[in-house]
Amino acid sequence: MLSRAEIFEKLKEILLFADAKNSDLIKNCDESTKLVTDLGFNSVSVLYMVIAIEESFGIVFDNVSMNDFDTIGDVVTYIEARLK
Image 1 (cartoon, helix red, strand yellow):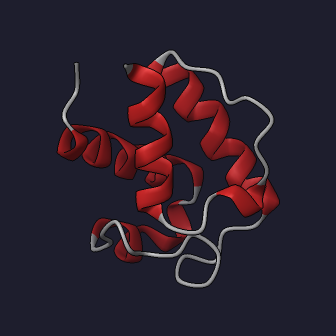
Image 2: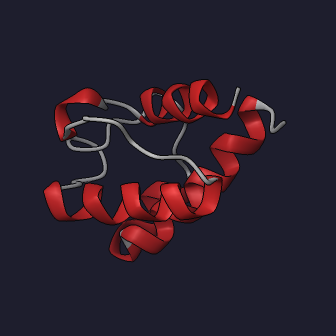
């Protein structure tokens, strides 16, 4: 199983793919970085992120919305719970 740090690093790669225009911000982010206010993610960016996460981690997002994830740490926690 992946460690939380490994999930975080893999998620950063996915975020770079989903929103390359913010590459400097994403490369320097941490788990407290806010998806919308810090990185400027919108519903389309979140959709791309969700699809990429599902494919990369082999998980399925169940009935989640953009409001369910405030920070990158929230996404890491969600992924971590699904991988157990």
